[in-house]
Image (cartoon, helix red, strand yellow):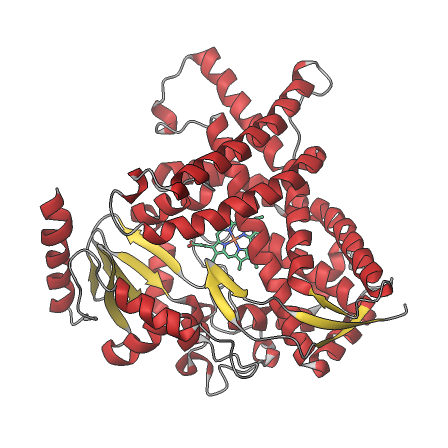
Length: 506
Ligand code: HEM
């Protein structure tokens, strides 16, 4: 097996790719191109940028910036023993994401790296396991359900605006906005997931945030097979943190079950946790009635462990991405006062009740939507879409051998001058004025059956929060802001985003 994994398979993959003209940097046995990538990364992000420029590809994905001009629009590199095929052709990407979902998915490295903090939930599931989970949670994201969440979003935002006002009144003219946005997005997803058990959801937020930061650090060593078995301090600490999270989740689940068992209600609720518990109970009942074997569900079993994993998955996928979208939008509008004023005027016209947008009015906020699009083009929270081929895949003229991870470099494509023109690195929301922009080059939420299930939720949330924020405050970028985007799973501002606030009367 070792021989196969370290020598034979990599050589076979290299040969197949080379025959098709796909080349890449020279690979070392075991470590692949890791040391080169590490050294490129550490020099690229060691300092803040000299100005607030959005030309960030060579800073955040320096290996892409180095290899793309040299090896072309498809190239192969190695993260340890994992081969990665970087694919940048929009038609091929669309076809790959739309058609080959059942024969591609999360790689071992990805699943291992996130095992402790999101486990086997939707984001990391593959094949039938993925299919069943997606089917079960979809009802939580229908149009009707979204409308109901809008009220929660407005309530949480009002609280956040009040605490900003309090901070201002106690003398803080400058605030760091990413902290506020992170707490707000966590608040909203906690209510959506846990509804009434929301107070415990808040406690979970802290525990999960710590666990995630811890896992991000530990997974740096994952390219080395067997590392997860080392009795390291990291591994011990991770396990202890995970146990705490699971215990708290179990408490939330148990109290929900108690309510049903003592007959106070007959449903577990229609928030995400409720939907999952209802489904688990229904399948249990069906099983005892018909004593069906595993057959029709292909071995899929929604048990308590999976429900806990799902709660963690949605918490993780649903708050950090959105809070970053909000933070970067505030940064960009703080640096572009004319766009800030235009959006404020639009909000005033569309929502003439103090900037609180009703669900029906959201689609009328077109300038705000253009600004949001431009923000996730320049700073896409998910900067890469990784998918491993589980079978040989024929994509146009390209054969992708089994075992290769296809990497769609979202950030690099969003900044490509070839796709967006010479001003690709500039903030210009007008490029989204026409609704007919090609979908292939703009993929912040991915495309195809495995796209972001929370896309409509996130966009609704972003519009509500930004509309309310912009009606209450005018804001400018502080001279203390240091522009230092960095990648820690997502694209973050290393030192936060400091803005100066001016409350508005309305
Ligand atoms: C601006 C905000 C967001 C962005 C940019 C974003 C982006 C993405 C992207 C690119 C993917 C595909 C990842 C991949 O295939 O590698 C994804 C998947 C996912 N997202 Fe989001 N997301 C956002 C907000 C949310 C929210 C609010 C939720 C939940 C409420 C959510 C839940 C998920 C889940 C569960 C998946 C996995 C879907 C699957 O594999 O079937 N996301 N997201």
